[in-house]
Length: 309
Image (tube, rainbow, N blue to C red; front, side, top):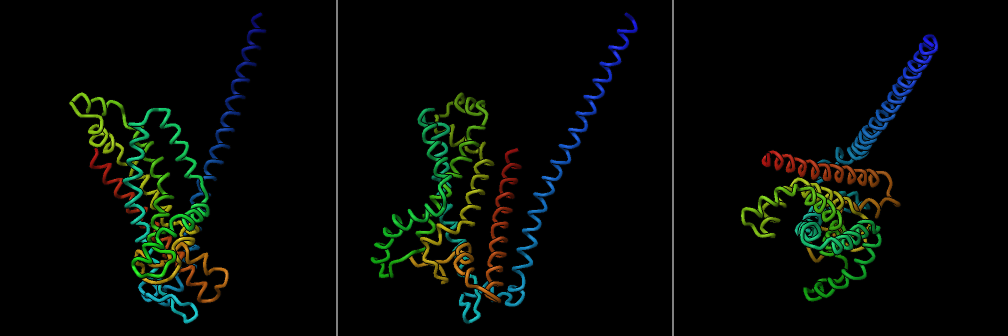
């Protein structure tokens, strides 16, 4: 009996050690998999940055500030000034955010804090559906519904009817609304209920509680939604192409405009030589533009978090 018990104990110990070795081997393998995935992501970003920089820098080195500050884009005459496109991109993105940010935050407040649960669930489903609509569909709807309405304003102002910067800004505002609403709503729901209970206990009304307590507490999440919205607005191409008019001139609200994102797909198919290099240069300018926006927003978020602490 003693030898049998000892043998059973030895077998059990061996089984435990074997399972431990198997677990350690599996853990090591998964560690390698995660490491490879992480390094692949970093390498992909690094490759994109290097490729865009190497491809776009020659035209900037050749033309210098004339490329960045020139107001004439005419590849047939070797004129490659992208200032109208930069200005149009900044103006369209800023106008879209001016409209979409307050509208999106207020819609998120309604969904998270005011609407009944059933109503909120239904509306949230529609918001999620809006975020999944392809950009070409947005562009088609904009060309059919928005651009003709602006025709009337252009005619009243004595301008030729066509696509415009205003149409592009409205289109971008509509497209980024679902992103801002979704992220802001999540941030508002994540605010601890104790904050609101304390505010109400001090005599604040429901709306005062929302605007004085909940929204400031969710500021970092709302700012993240703003960053995502800016990124999508600055990088959108197809919908903008269909409503902006695509004229490479200094932008005006009711006149045609061409954004940085639209220039590359419009001219890529027939470009070659210096023209192709100029399109790579536009890609580099767009890349730096979006990176600068993201860095600025992240600094604002960190500053706000520091003040909150």
